[in-house]
Amino acid sequence: MTNTINIFKKELKGYFVSPVAYIVISIFLILTGWFFFSSFFLYGQAELRSFFSLLPIMFSFIIPAITMRLFSEEFNTGSYELLFTMPVSSLNIIVGKFLAATAFITIMLLPTLFYGVFISFLGDLDWGPVTGGYIGAILMGAAFTAIGLFASSLTRNQIIAFITGMSFCFVLTLIDKMLFFLPESALNVFQYLGADFHFQNISKGIIDSRDLLYFLSVCFVMLYSTKLAIEERK
Amino acid sequence: MIRIDNLAKYYGDTRAVDGISFEIKKGEILGLLGPNGAGKTTTLRILTCYSRPTSGNITVKDYNIYEHSLEIKRLVGYLPESAPLYPDMLVYDYLKFVADVRELNKTVADPRLKELAAMCAITEVMHRPINELSKGYKQRVGLAHAMMSDPEILVLDEPTSGLDPNQIVEIRDIIKTIGREKTVVLSTHILSEAEATCDRIVIINKGKIAADGSTEELKKEAVSDYVINVSLQHSDFDGVKKILETIPEVSGTVLVNSGNGAMDFYMTCSGNRDIRPDIYEIIKNNNWPLLELHRETRTLETIFRELTKEG
Image (cartoon, rainbow over all chains, first blue to last red; front, side):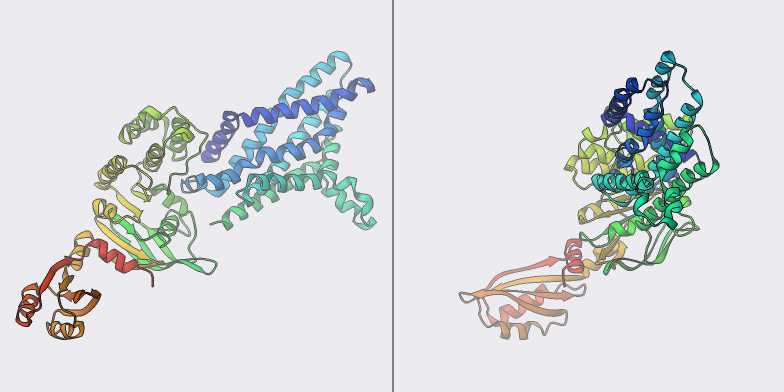
């Protein structure tokens, strides 16, 4: 447990010592701000719904970029050998890295709280869906982080890790938009698999255990696969 | 202390390590010597629980690598080849991280960091990012990493590769100082290095043990076999060979080159008696004009070359 925290601290600090973190956060804020406010004044509604509906697609690009280095860079520089021969288990390493990246995403979302504050001055903002939206965003962020972490554990090349992670997240985001290609009997299954579907449920302000279970199980399956991928390298 | 049992590791069809067994006693400095690709790094990686063997076992104290890898990792400090440290971190931050992971509490960690910084002479680079350090400094930071928790066993993979001669001497001194109390296992492909630092040398080649013994033992073995080089102003090699091989110690005579009525050859001999007077006697009686006669003691170097040469 202590070692999970040690790794968490090191990884989180690692994000902020290089300029990459600031660049990623800036890009995220500029893009979401741009897309959100470009239509916000046209609708004239005091709500954050269009911001939250942007997040799944935005996360599909941004999160794999945040997670791609987590293992690939270590494999590439060889630092993994040092890390793994210290008294830490692979679970400590995986969970530490996963929590660090999830925390980073939470930090990245923090400045967008100002959107809510700003809008509440303009009109009567309903904080229920907003709270739900942020809880959903963090859950979806965690699930995509787990996917990105798994992609990173497969290769020493960060670009490949990024593309693999992004494709995976992209499929999960878009799968429930593509339902008309699928046979009717499979619709429910595929809809249930879609990350966007569950996220939109939560961001309406309804926290349903099915949606929570979905994100947690994506995290679990991906982290477990990461563990298998790491053990396989031994 | 450490017991390696019939260890084997295959990468696909390549056998990196092929049935190695030996024991390492407490307080020993053991050198794992072999040419590049002999299986040294693989052996050390298995010992440090970084990779798993295909078959065989290693036990450290009462722990084995399959069930007690965390316990073994606690006992072992490891410096991988060329010290692959986190490039973006500051030296101090990195060592602090290692101290945390090694579960040194704050009151112990700070003095320990200072002590290691002084011991490895890295005090002046403590606040620089690792990727700005020269290779020698990186290696020393790696050494500090390995020694952080004052481990009972220190495993060093090519600790002096890529360093300049002064740095090599410094690192060797550090290793010797540590070796007074700790068990040290180091790998190298440089013989003089093993000779200078180790109590015992295990030579491995193509994944198998080729020789195992203390430096003295290996040298003694080396001296009991020797080579005598002879040049004569004479052209009948077969005749000379026949007569010289009547000396019982001579086990073979090989022509090196001949021409202009002269020839060079060497004789491989065994035993402790010096047979040069006998050879001279024969040459004198046959009236062969002698150009050169000298004895070449087999050094560790020649043994190493013979044991590890191709084919």
